[in-house]
Length: 257
Image (cartoon, rainbow, N blue to C red; front, top):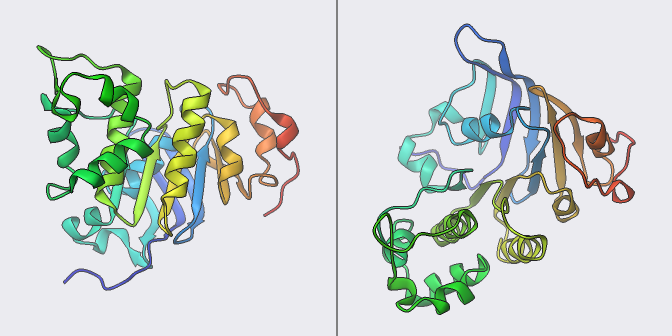
């Protein structure tokens, strides 16, 4: 039987991950993600952010330590029961040959027309879809409409929102978008969360102010964590691989744990 819990929080207890014969990708991570919270995961390229997401979705299993979801060891969850609770946007959004509508309905085949349109509005896709001759029934794929990386990413966001899962995990959802569009997208997502748990992997420091807590990874270790103004996030400009601009005036260099 699936675990009976309404808790949608995560707890990492001394979690490490390594590929066989390799150095750890993540090392001794201790992190609480409370249910209903908004948590940003930040850090330079190669710091382990996407691996952390893969552990949360059980695409990979910890090499050491314990990872709990809803107060229960993640490995104890039946696959279908776990994935029903998660909506995930990976760095590479997967779209299939067919119509835009068919791609979106993969998330929820019984979704109403209004639910589809609301997901597209939140994902900042409405104007683009309305500009297409066939709207949501436009074919995409090799021999049909070619879409940009930003459009593909926003379609993946719309599909995730359509699932209405209690946990939303977004890995760089605004990458490739111009700053105003990225900001509108994040604000619309947050407005519609309604108590759901959000985990956001991002390189956009201006999005951190919208979060409850920020976790800073560097070389597989959790370097700092806490509220955006006091998590040691001022360390970001000194980390290799984190490009400017750095809004350091908004960020604290103090550590509050």
